[in-house]
Image (cartoon, rainbow, N blue to C red; front, top):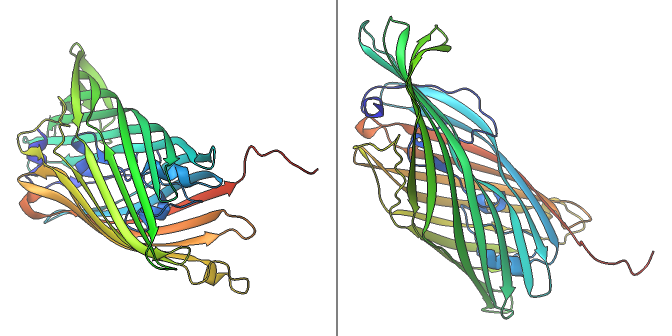
Length: 417
C-alpha cells in the first residue's frame, strides 16, 4: 500500500508536534523510525565530535569519558526543528519540539566515574495523504506516532592519566502506533488497518579514550567506541476494520475483525566509532570522526516492503571549538565557546534503489555561568536529508537546540560551618 505513496505524487502534511513525537518525517515509517542523535547539544554543535576527555561535560557517546569527570554533572537538552518536505511537485512545512536527553554524571573516585540517564532512541511521526483527483478511484491516508526511549547506566575507569576505559548497558523500550485508511474518493466508508507495536531490547556499549601531549600546549585526542550486536523484540497487535469517516476524518467503526498478535525479532548490528584530533586544552580543538554500522534488520510485519531495503551505514564528521580566553575577567565574550562542524551520513535506508543520505552544517555557542562551572549551550543545524529523485521526498531542515550543563560538587562533607 505505502509503495503507491512512495512512487507516486504525494501530498505530505503535518501539524505542530511536541515531545512525544520527535520527528515529522515520512522516512520514519520505515524500521523503528528516525534514529535520534544520542549526544549532547555541545557535541551536536560540532557535528558529533566527542574525542576530548572533558571534566565538566558529559559525553553520552563514549562511556570511557565518565572517568574524567571532576564534578557532578546534570545535563538536559531539547530542540526545535522546522523542516520543508518536498517532492518534484508538492511541498509542505512541519515543526516539532522534543526533549533530547536527561543525564547525570558522577565522579566516584579519582579514577572512576558513572553516568546514567534517559535518551529518546528513535521517533515515529508522519502523516501522508494521497487523494485521487478523480472520483471512484482509490485514495489513502497514513499516519504514525511513537518511538523508542533508552535508559542507560555506564561506568568509566581511568587506567592511566592518558588512557580511560568504559562500558554501559542500555535498555530500550517504547510503542509505535500506525494507521492506514484505504477508501474510494467520494464515499465516506473505507478500510482501516491499525498496528500497535511494543518494542523492548537490551544493548551494550564499550569505549576507550586516549590523550597525550605532542608539545607543551598541543594535545592529541582520540576516542573509540563499539556497540555490540543486539536484538529488539517486537510484539505487534494488528486490527483491520471497516469505518465511516467525516470531512475531518473522524472515524467510527462499522465492523471489526479479530485482533492478530505477532512477535518478531529486529536486528541492531554492531557499530564502531573512531575519532581523533588535536588541540590546546581550554583553547581550541579540531577533530574528525567516523562511525560505521552493518546493515540492519528492522523491517516489521506492518512495514516490510519490496521496494525498501537496508544497507550498511556510515557517518563522517569534522568539527571543533574555539575559546578566545576561558579565564578572562574583563570580557565575558572572550569566555564564550564557539563550536562548528560538518557531517555526512549514509543512513542505511534504501527506498526505490535510492540511498537516503543526510548532510548538514552545525554551529553553536556555549555561555558559561559566572561564578560556577555550569554552562548554557545553544546550537544550530542546517541540513538536507533524502532526495526528490525516484519519486521520493527531500527534507530541508533547521534544528535549534538548547541545553543546560549544571556542574557542582556533591556528597562532600563540610569541614567548616
